[in-house]
Length: 391
Image (tube, rainbow, N blue to C red):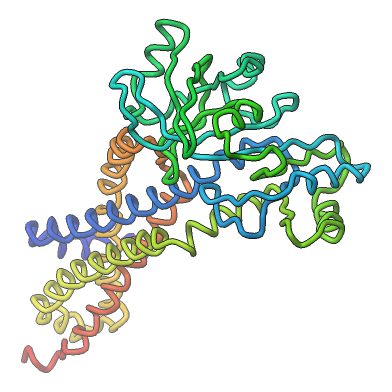
């Protein structure tokens, strides 16, 4: 109740100079939007980078120790994957091939950009993406692929042409040759910072497209366990069984492996975190300037309050309440603007940029702390409010 009674005093001081209040709120709004955008794009980077990992229907995975990320996988012998069948816990294993090919735009007939090609043994349920299971039998036909409907528009009007005609034919180029392929279906995976578009096909079709690749060298080995077995226990057992020329990861470890690359091995994570820090610094400086000026102009009034018996902590609480009001009033429009910006960014980049409750709560707490830091710095001026100065 005491806190509620003090709020009108803080609010009256803030709105006394409406132009100054608006500037303070704009500073907070700017900082909130910057933080939201930086965090949104950063998290979208990590989420898009592990879409394939999350869609893989395996419990344990084998990769080469030289692999650094999904877009830079090194091959390893498929026999290592076959050796895992010696364990009774294993239900089945499936090789996965990954590679970038030059996609020929079927409309302009030009090679536009690299497209990410995923090849796997279609006898097993390897991936869980909408559209793959319905079209899996079509991949038994040579030179047939499924096209990611969420790929960027630069690859051509493939989705529209397929929905109108029922199929699309074009070419995929690689280092050694070009291969004529037929799009026989669509699926949903989505773009990432590493790939602008995706294709899914059988591992046999993959080897036809990438004729320089050898069947015995794979990029990912998927292991599916029988129900009831402990994944972590099996992972540790397999690590001791297989030679060190292959890395054994659980699905959670495989996802963390990819995220760690983008966060620590590239400058992207640092840049986005730096943007968050700069946004907060800007907010602190703006709010501090407003609160400091406000305190300076009302020093005689604060000195009068001291003279009639109000304690220093009461005066400090007024400034901190002003900081809290600025934080809340600036956060609300900043939050709404960020939601609109997320929609624009999502359509422009095709990245999974969405507002989450955790992020909204984090930015709210960060905004309050930001304004409290400004208020705590500005209240030092109150020490100069000496009652003797007004007599």
